[in-house]
Length: 130
Ligand code: THU
Image (cartoon, rainbow, N blue to C red; front, side, top):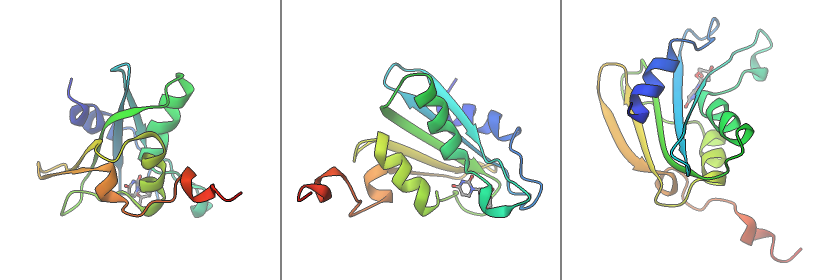
């Protein structure tokens, strides 16, 4: 199964009763295994979590810390852009050139990379003076 198909499939399980905006994400770990995530909203709105965060948490829980590929899908007019926080989360485990596919349920897709999604990211090197 392709990573995008995995994201499309898991999206059905998103818990989004407040925004009604279901998002599915899938990341591939260095082992080749696919990890899936969905957005999980909460009546206390800020407690909700994004699909990308769920997929990353599943990967880390399985013992992996390297993302080789990402796919995110939603029923949006244009390929769904990850929020700023998720871009930083993806950058933690992906490389600059790690491929990211953003998609709509209608079939539009945008191929980009973790580095292009977050230019000038904060990383370990910025703490070198500590
Ligand atoms: N959302 C994600 O899960 N990932 C994204 O990349 C964009 C936004 C979720 C958060 C919230 O549950 C809903 O979409 C509306 O913002």
